[in-house]
Length: 225
Image (tube, rainbow, N blue to C red; front, side, top):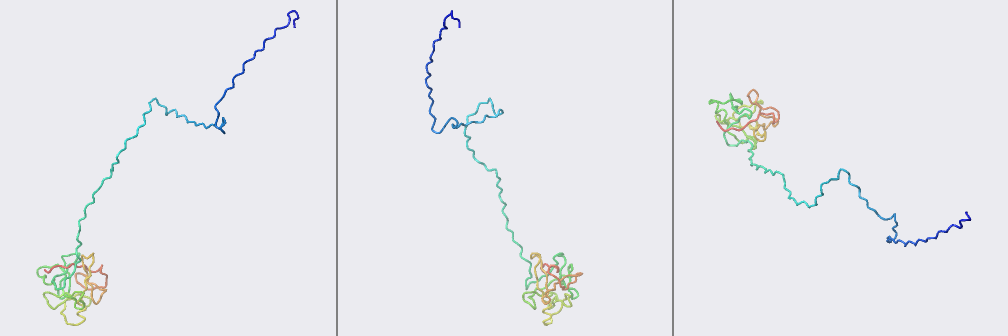
């Protein structure tokens, strides 16, 4: 210290006024600074930002649903009448034709039964009176028109035209039971006393053969010629 200069002046001591205490709103009890819930919305992606003003949201008017299904009117079915099955009418006069070749008809020739094409001379040979079965009323027998009292019968397995003799054997042999086939459109003739035998045509001559109804010769009734 320089003694000639004397003592250094002492700076006056300044006292700053005390700052007024700052007051903050009180937090709800139990919520400190780290307990305040904060909701953070994610930023929209850059591609979604547009200068086009946002349209005001409006409610779309209700639309009426229209069915595009095409309604097809079902065609009206026409009632069809199923044809009645073929049959032989007892007491009538008629004949039988081959179902698969109707130009051929059952006839007698030289006292034997056969299938033939019929001309004027053979017409009477192809006509028969349908009688109730001589041995069974549920079946039929065939009496010749031009030879009354003569019936078709099987003898030695051949179909023949014989005169009725009143015997039980004759009545049995001359009785045939018609069975319908092909949904009723044709019939076959089953022997009454040989029930596993049916009338068939072989080389146009008729005989009875042990077979099935489906394999027998099919016939269709025809009016008298």
